Image 1 (cartoon, protein in one colour):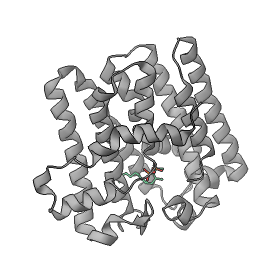
Image 2 (cartoon, rainbow, N blue to C red; image 1 turned 120 degrees about the vertical axis):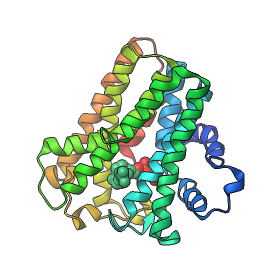
Image 3 (tube, protein in one colour; image 1 turned 180 degrees about the vertical axis):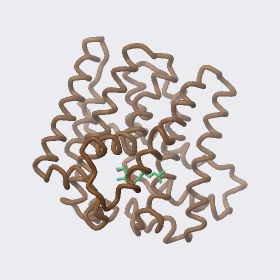
Length: 295
Ligand code: GRG
């Protein structure tokens, strides 16, 4: 069985080259394009493309057809990080081991770089839909999961509840949207692209919900237990900003048991996919990594 690191070598080979050419060559000297590439090509775990690649492989969906959606998703994810780091939001200096976009390019250009990544990501999707109309649902789903019903909706609840003790149900809703929605896009997009909208889609939605919560619970744990050298971003922020998190509400031990519950949920869904005849080896390895990650 291959390790998570070995799996990402393959998925990074699949996506990385495309990420370096998302903007037209003649725009390479534009300051907003430079700032966009600065953040997009700074690395990061690339967990969303990895999940999308191995979900497609499991379903037997052509990874070349899925690729523009993975590129688009990583662009949307990067825009959200640039905007989240701005002084008017989380006010952060460090991201992916480097100074944040606005520290290097200034706030105005960082704002534009985020906008630019978002707009271009949907332009890339529309270009695919123009070629093949059957991809329209995939594009619409990507927009919905990134927007007010998904990530932006989660961020909206998050910002409006800073400094207050939120009920557990609100914490779950916030995190399902803020973190979970883009992970759902990663895991389910191959279903929409490949026209597999039956039981597989329902199972992969369920899997994403557990993966999203496990990912966020681990993020909250690492914010307390890890350090900025290891994570490439600042730590201790949740307490600084008086945020309700899985750790602040359940304590560290409680957060670890919530994490285990989500991992069990993932494994149950993966078990059902095995019963349906799918090979879940790679997705199982990724889930294991997410539940043990140190960065
Ligand atoms: C600004 C619309 C808008 C949304 C911001 C991304 C985000 C929403 C907030 C950042 C803070 C946070 C804890 C988000 C939860 C999602 C998350 C853990 C993002 C970091 O994702 P990783 O760890 O990052 O995959 P890398 O750098 O590895 O790609």
